[in-house]
Image (cartoon, rainbow, N blue to C red):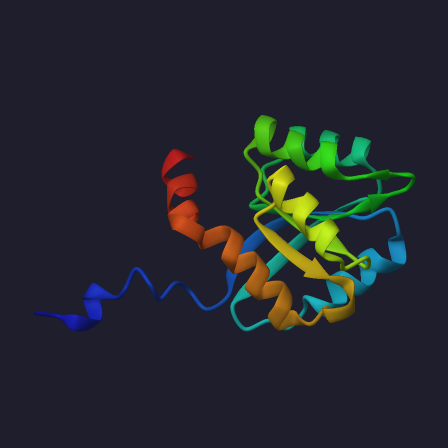
Length: 149
């Protein structure tokens, strides 16, 4: 019995490429998020940036993304309708990003269907990778999406 072969499916390539749709109305915050995500040991995150719900919807309709990282506040509105559309129309998992880290915002996000959560106050590469990995591999989701493609 080859024990190592039994666990090959668990040991994916060290720097797996992940396509991320980043939605935040603040261009400085988008740059900070992308900088914080550099240098990770497990994921090579490729970002497409959007500054509004409209841009994000158009981008999601044009290209395939592995996940979206979406700020809670987009201008004068929350991103909850956008998150729900990503879930229902594009089957796109969402990590909610916010500088307003309260239990109410987290609860609202999870009720809307987010699969991960990041606070802008704790943006380090390990937190971003952990959130992305949790979204991508929860319940075998990444394998199911790969098989469907």
